[in-house]
Image (tube, rainbow, N blue to C red; front, top):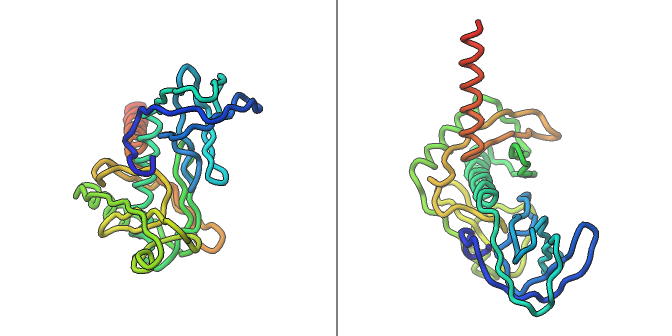
Amino acid sequence: YETDSYVQTFAAQVLACTPVQGGFSVVLDRTAFFPEGGGQPYDTGVLGEANVLEVHEKNGVITHLCDKPFEVGKSVSGKIDWARRFDHMQQHSGEHICSGLICERFHCDNVGFHMGADVVTIDFNADISWDELMEIEQLANLYIYEDHPIDIQFYRGAELDKVEYRSKKPLEGDVRIVSFPGADCCACCGTHVLRSGQVGLVKFLSVQKFREGVRIELLCGKRALEYLSKTWEQAKAIGQRL
């Protein structure tokens, strides 16, 4: 998932299988399942005949919570839930575009990010008004329409020192930098689209005072389309009843 977010199926070997609460913890020699991290939820899907319920990483080891056990040493095939994965890719890439534009304009930091099942929330240590946010929304959608290519590279040491990127904490070793040329450059472990056009659109829902700055609610891609479609249907129904 780090090198190709579009891999949906793969083959792997089972290295370990341990009974745990809720199922079996399975470790593979390779995986396309994204483990929860960086504000992005885990992938789900199937592994052999088992359902993959959760995926987590701890101390560099990725564990898959499955509802059936596996024989250690056995070869298995995996398939991720692509609809869930692509939704997360649209949300995460859209968030990067918006965050990059906001940080550039207001000289602030993204201090919080959470991708919920319904909406994405982003926290900034700056005072941003709704009108200013609407200007960012226009710029973000224009960037999406221009269909820019997204670049993802690993850097370390002197090479990393030459890169200007956003990060919430100091980083060492191999650092994965996700670049949206002209919009954002950020250290990130998540899955992303290949080109900005695949985000589809972004729609801000709210901006509220939060701690020393603001919390913004955002929808991207299919989520934004479905929300705007439902809003239009609602407005049409209200108009007819009035």
